[in-house]
Image 1 (tube, rainbow, N blue to C red):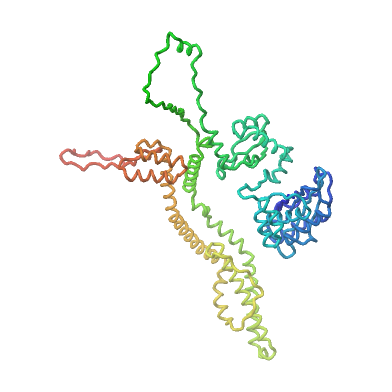
Image 2: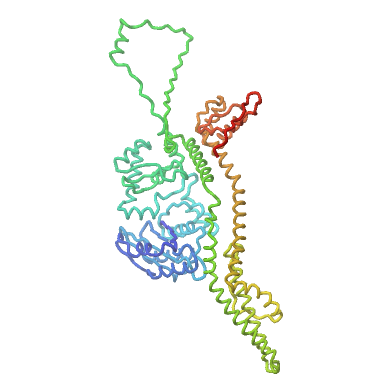
Length: 602
């Protein structure tokens, strides 16, 4: 039994999964045991509300032998028990294809109060599948995690089942690997390509070619298929893919043919070697003339103790010129060396091109800054004006209460004090928020101001008169437009000076990195040169470092040779000659003539 698990992201939604599971056109029959499309939609909404990345868990299980609907439903119960999922919140759909039934179990990632378990889920699901096969007497299916499953069964006390699973994973055998993913199969199905049939055909062609790449490429071309180097040559050097003539991807060569990457690289190196030159055979007539009795030479008599050693003729090696963009025909180590060289050059050029001062953006004009800030603080100034009017009314009422003779007896003074205190605290809170907002807008305060807390709780211990006198100056400044503009000018000058300091610090901190990148780029650009001025041992060590893919060692060899010799190194890119200023010679009274007495024009 094969069990596959897929986690559906919240951003992907439920529609694609519902279309595949609930309306599969290639299925002979479809049986919806539990759930509906509305359940899937609600589960995705719950996961989105909880801030989860994944919303649904899709588990597809396909038995090798036929199982009844009851047995498939019981197997889905065991899967839910293994993952700790609620059996009441699940969707179970059975499909029939080629007179065989397989199931689709869909679970929500959010299980009421926790997230569905995903720790070692692949191994755990394979363990449930092996136990189900043992229970039903089906043949066991070998998987990638059989050794780990056997260990887990021993810990659970199921030693008999563990021994049966251990027999599936012999020592030294390569782990099973799928030739293609379910996603790749769905993509090719939408493009009207039968991926399983093509996989079998490619495997048959590989066996027919005798595991030789040139023959295999010719057989693929006859079938309308192409084998080329993959697009991810930087992360997986040497990996090749097989695709159709119109560019439809079928899969990786190593996955489709079950060949290890190490063996495939050896085949590529063998294919890249030059073919042996055919021997030049003398024509039959010339050989007959040479062997005729008239032109035959007397046989050469050798001494009795002579030893005959066959002559070793080495094939001539013809050097070829290869572009730096086509490194698949080179030695893999030398190709890796060239890749590292290009990466280092690109990194250094990127460091030189980037400008840290561009993060700050253009300097805004003063009028534009003032206009934007006045628009942002307009609602706060309106609140401040209303709070000031309320405070003035409360102050007048307080003075009238204290001037009244019966104010203390009737409680008028106490009420006036409370009203004045509340109005004063509200005004102070609005003023605090307005000032912190201005500092934050100008960049003089890192954190934004705390939100307004209205109504403000009273505090009897505060001296209201001193607080009012302390804030009166700022109130008068912010209520007057001209004085507000003067305050904005002061804050603007402070923000500009702080900006200039940050820019100078960033430029000073960036200068060592820039110099290091320039020096390294200069060293890297010396590498493509011919290096004819190097001695024999240094040149051999340098070429050995190149062909073994060691870029840093090649740089160290050139640097060491530069330090031990006094002769200047030849550079691929010559530096510009520094022009020294020419000074006029000192005046000589014996040779100087009298200056001209004609007046200047200007």
